[in-house]
Length: 103
Length: 479
Image (cartoon, rainbow over all chains, first blue to last red; front, side, top):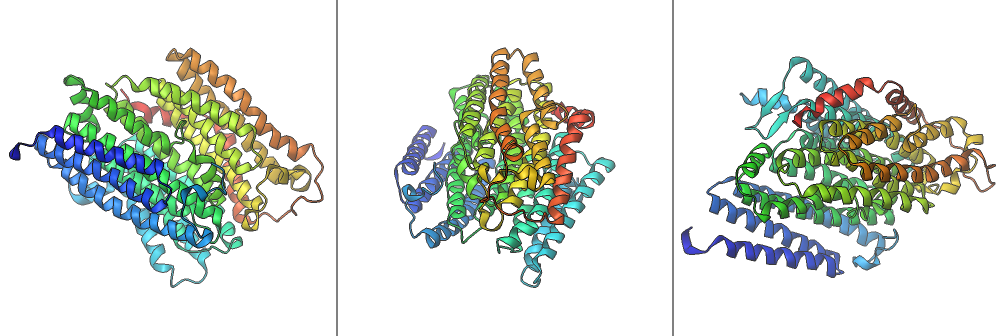
């Protein structure tokens, strides 16, 4: 592999990002930050895909990563719209104050 | 194969996309939004005819470099999704008007969601599966929050969106790992690669991560937490839609991925076993204590996902056929029950408590009678579709020597009869209270949809042969 960076380094980076994202979703209370943490997980996936794609010399992983970037944009658009609707009705975007429907 | 010949393998989806875009374009020009609803009905009917044409002309086989496979399995699910779409759209006209949220994009979103579901059922490649899943999910997230002025609806949409995209992220991480382990995203090639080489831990981790993603979408325990909240807060026709369409689509890809691509990874059988048991228990015992009928149906939907997972755990052709039959029966009976809830809820969904149904049998005998048919079918009483659905599931499980799971499943359905019967008792054996909501006239569209759903439930219960034969032929992909 060019640059002599072994695949395990990429996998380690991606696992670290994935873990950070999961902790962010579970521990943070602000919904926008939860959304950002989900994006972090998606980027961990992208790093994985691109690294594997390079390692296996198969371009389909990179194509997949492009689809994930497009999907993350669509998801963020819808998600922010829903967050705005929530804020209008409720005046808050703290996850622990979403208690009208009991968990 | 030419591009045109390939698109014919996706004919229903192509038709629905055209109609969905047309509805979006016509929305600002049309003042009577019901006309857009009729356009959506037209689109669904044309797509159904397109599916029939596809079968008659024999447009089977792979397309788009093997990403799409048009087989009987895909056709079975598409017909199911289109019929679900018809029932949902027809039952939404009056609901949207009563709640003053009659916007054209509602119909477009339902159509787009069905496009995504159809793609899921027909794809045999993980990238396509992911794209189909997202087309279906993103449309459903918006539909869940469609009562934009209602705080519960926004909250439901937000919870569904956050947990849904979280689960999708797990699914994607699993897909990335399986790509790394095998170097391909085609289901058949993944299976070949896993069978040929030594299997590292990466494939097992991938199978577990993808289980989280699919488990969430079919609302199987322990990923079921969102279901009661989202069903309670969403508009009732949308809750019915979510319990039928996206769930069946998720089961379709769940079956395809685990029974073809990940079939050599044996470990997931126990995940499935535990998840099936947990779903049945959490669903049924959770439903016992509910006072809101939408929450009760949500817990019952978790329990039914558990029954379906029992048939899935059989990992046989019989099991797959049982899953398909059950999805059809469940769609008819559960959607029917949700349509009654839609009509009965009235403006702003005020009447969604089980107590509101007190004495309904005396005040509106016809409405109470159809609801009774749906509830009896959900219990699994003979002569209804639910009975044969459960019968085939437990038969497949027994043939696969899943004795323990079958016994626990049957015990669970006995528990379940309590909370369904409670609604029937409240409707027939109590006098209407003075606080009971006034009897509203049942609009024509609702009565039509309810009769169709009731006839479908009884048809599946009395003549299950045709649908079962279709399901058995569709299950042939698993060999």
